[in-house]
Image (cartoon, rainbow, N blue to C red; front, side):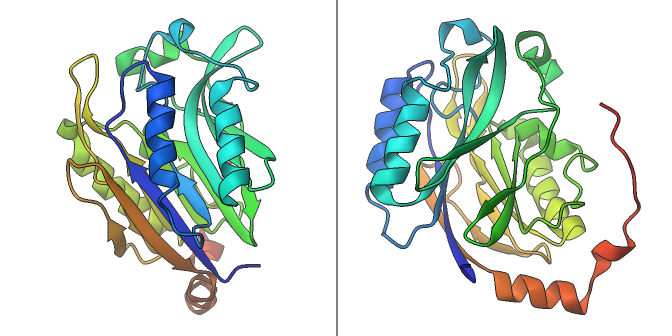
Length: 260
């Protein structure tokens, strides 16, 4: 078990519909990271941008981007997670893939598809949450619009870290900041959100606000606004456990069942 976890989140200007170019960019950034990095977090649809035309860019789990993630994780001896457009059983998914340093991977399919952009008409929603065990930490990944739905992310699984990967535009960036902080407080969990910058093919603009919050909702790390940047965050299991033992608000939470 690692009492501390060193997490890096990469805030990037994604090149629309060009997986090879995006992979090269992230590879160059990852190769500059120090060897004590444990986990690298990439944005939503990091290889393509947030596209509603999955047939033109989708890959399989045996495709170039997942293979690249596996190779990078093994080569750099660090875990990597990011969301990709995946075709699986003749369906398209907005899928977050978590690759362990061994090359073993797990995945989460975005449940809350952004209907305002028609994501629900192009992609199949996920039905299951996952909690990833990594170096003694319990990590729960979500994707962008999931952030608006606190019931789905409620800490009923005793996770330690929430991860949100996003393409969250400037007009609603205050909501992004507020909801990341709220998810940290209500779940007594570290909460890290990585967002892109730049302008996509549809004219939507993004300014990042990639940030990390602790279990009290205090911002412990953030990136430069509107610029390519790298967030570095060391989180402490000892501090988290001590806080939960002293103020165990989670034991008083309401019970519920999510209808699928």
